[in-house]
Amino acid sequence: MFPPTADIASAVRPARGPRRPGDIDAIGPELGVFDAAVGRRVLMYQANPVATLRAVVRALRPGALVVFQEADATMFPASRVPLPLNERANRWMWQTVEREGGNIHMGFDRVPALEEAGLLVEQVRAEAIVQTPKLRHPVGRIIRVMLPRIVEHGVATEAEIDVDTLDERLAAECAAANATYIGDVAFGEHAKEALLSVAGRSERDVYAVGADKGAGPLVLHYDGAGWQRLATGARGDLWWVHAFATRPHCGGGPSARANRGPTRWPCAGGPCDPRES
View 1 (tube, rainbow, N blue to C red):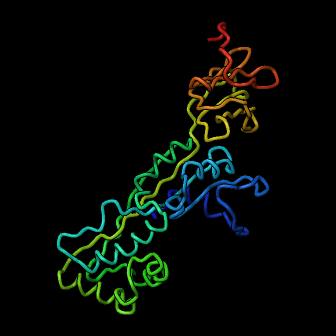
View 2: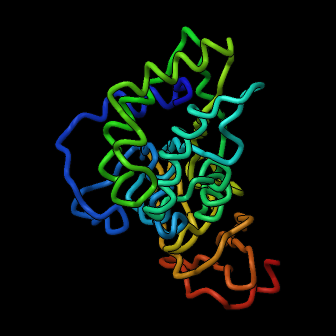
View 3: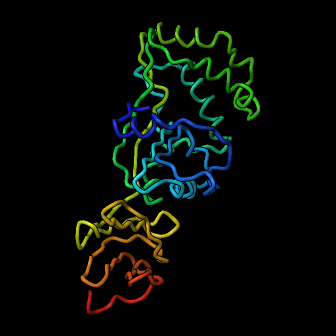
C-alpha cells in the first residue's frame, strides 16, 4: 500500500475497537458514524462496487476519508526476458481470482467507481511488486495459502505446483537469467465525499453542497458552532449553492434542485423561484 499521508494516518491510527463481521452492503446505523473507511482487495470481489461504496459512505461522517488498495493484473507479469515458471505461477493466482468472480482489473476500474459513488478522489498511486534474483516476493507462501482454491477451480494440480520447492525454483529461474520481474501492481488512493459549491450569508450561516452518493445530495450547514448535514428530499448531484437574503437555493442536474424555506427543504423537481434565479 502506498505510504499514508498525515491525514490518512491521523484518521486511521486511532481506529481501535471491536471487530464485527457483517455484510459490507448492509452497514446499519446501529454501528454509529465513522471517520474513515479502509479496505484492501475488497472492491475487486464485489458484484457492484459502486453500490458497495455508496453503502460504506452512508456510514461515514461528512468529509471522512475513504482509502482502498486494489491489486491489478492488466499489464503484468512483465520482464525483459522469458521467465516461464514465474509467469505460470502468476497465472495460477490470477486465474483463480478470476474464476472466483474477482475483477482482476479493479486497479484501473477503481477511480471511476469511486467517482460514480459520489466521492472526490484526491490522490492515486500505483506500486509495482518488483522481484530480482536477491529481492524476492513470497509467491510460494501465497500460493500455499491459495492452493485449495487453485485446485478447486481447476487452474492447476498440486503436482504441477509442487509448492514445497516453488519459491526456490522461482528464485533460481530469475538468477539464471539475472532478470528483474514484475508480477503484480497495487493501486491505492484516498477520496472524500465530493463538495462542489460553498456559499454563505455570514460567518455563522454557511452552506456547502455536493454529490449524491445514493441517498440524496450532500448538503451541509455551518451555524458558527459546527457543521450539520441536512436532508433535502432531492436526488442527484447539487453543483452550486447561492445564499440569497431570504433563503439558500441550490441546483444541479434536471432532478436535483431545492430551495430551503424557513424550516425545511421542499421536495426536489420544483422550479426555481424566478425572483431568485
